[in-house]
Length: 228
Image (tube, rainbow, N blue to C red; front, top):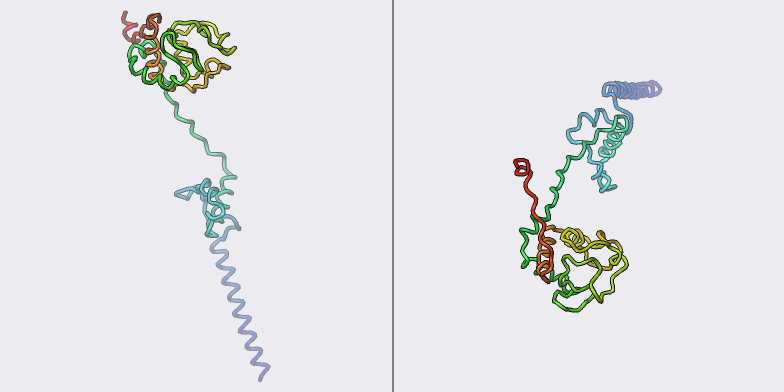
């Protein structure tokens, strides 16, 4: 009697295990579970918002709180590796800056504005007639003067070997970036970035000494030139 009870109990346990195994086998095939590290769908096609890998990198490892997120990242990376690189859109062409017409800039510049802006130069230069040289040479009558020629000032070799004179064009280029325009000179001024500021300072310098050459003529608009 006891043996028959144990036999019946064993058969019940075996039947339960068999049913559980069969149900597990059935559901495994029904759901088609993907291999580890992959998803059951294509994240490159089905995701409304692809993963922001930059944000994941910046927040690593705290960006991956949920294990499902780590699995999704693995599947996303796997999907990216099996595809052709996505084309990178070429940057939109930037419009070229219109060439500066120095004649027009100088015609519209005001010497009073240039005098105010030239105060940044007053710590190194004197602007008065017969005034002294300081860290830089006296600037009275500088417009039209030969480069590196003011008496009594110890110019750098780069400035002494620079040909030409301080024409409006040369001053305009030099004041934009002295170190770039005449490499090796000792002027420590970074330059005036805005063309309008440079034009105003040059108009002021042209009033010092009365020997400045005539201002360059503004260029005529292209339409008027063609009509003549």
